[in-house]
Image 1 (spheres, rainbow, N blue to C red):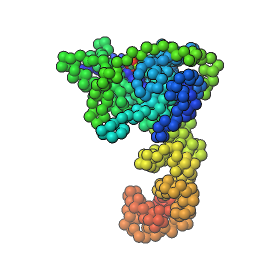
Image 2 (tube, helix red, strand yellow; image 1 turned 180 degrees about the vertical axis):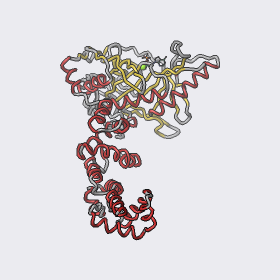
Image 3 (cartoon, protein in one colour; image 1 turned 120 degrees about the vertical axis):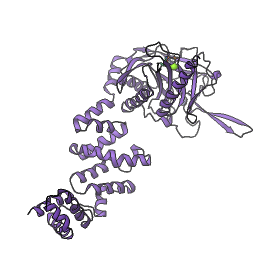
Image 4 (cartoon, rainbow, N blue to C red; image 1 turned 90 degrees about the horizontal axis):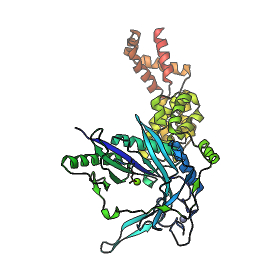
Length: 477
Ligand code: ADP
Ligand code: MG
Ligand code: ZN
């Protein structure tokens, strides 16, 4: 009999605010020198008081709306007490018994995963280990992240395969990005995931779960779940029992390792945060936030299909990421709706290939949406050939020059003048009597080599559709 894997995910997402949850320190400290973005509040100095960041609360509520959660009219911040050197106050301000939202859902490929709850909390600092010499190693702490606003999104244990967990994370990230909640850049720690994994015989009660931490990518989540489920199966089949514990994913070794239990024995002694009043969500305020929630990925995909006539597949690709959807939509708004399908093709082929190859940031690519729209327009209207369009695109990417300028500079304007084309056609027919005879004899396929000959004579500038027609006319007469 086979085992079934049961998975529940806990996702931490950094809210995209400028400043921290309880003070005015900036949040954008990734890659910056340590301890430059701190103040007495976020380093927990005696006598300070927190002031709740309205923008963070608004984004948190909009996240909950995007995930179809029930919103609490009244929620309460709580202190989660534990000692760790990256936690200056000795407690983390979080929410416990009364989180601001519960009971949401997120659709994945062929099921809906229920969301148990979402609560707000502040981030901790970061320990920098293995500093100093080998004889005298020591650790330092960077508090830049301390107090950065987060939401924790806790799913129900509704997923049954590593693939479903991967899909859930992919869709969750898309909803959070499109909703304007977070950039969700995992490399910057803006999205983090812990996976709870157990196995059971189908239809049996849930087994004992293991929580896996240290998952740095969606792929790591998927791999860790597969390996952890196999490990648990080995334990149970060997007559053992699975111990409820926290394990760390070791990417290099491809296995989970138990975490030192010392770090695990938590008794958080939660109690309500006395320095913050309960959070009351007024109806009018909630309605305003709901009205201001940006278009979510599913709606945007449907709109691209309806408004631009894109296929299901193309629309899915164009809405895979918010920055890409924004880029594409801007191209269409400049090139015009009739060019939308061509624009989608350009974005998927030359554009994405270049972005991937250079790991370019979509917000700062050298070919702006306006420039790509110019290339698309010139190709669609027949001013330049598709091949020339590719060249112009590549040059525009490398030089930042305007496509129209490049077309002039490189002499790529397509020739559609019939008089000029006829001269090339005549020369091509004279030079290829065999192919000409084949076409006359009804071998349609032979026309390709004649068109090719014209393209060569014109150094790629002849309009191939026109050339094709002119050759046919000529040979039929
Ligand atoms: P805790 O309060 O200790 O964090 P929760 O009950 O809140 O525990 O569960 C945390 C996560 O673990 C949730 O995502 C939940 O769906 C998941 N989970 C709970 N039980 C199991 C189980 N038996 N197998 C897999 N995941 C589980
Ligand atoms: Mg938990
Ligand atoms: Zn601060």
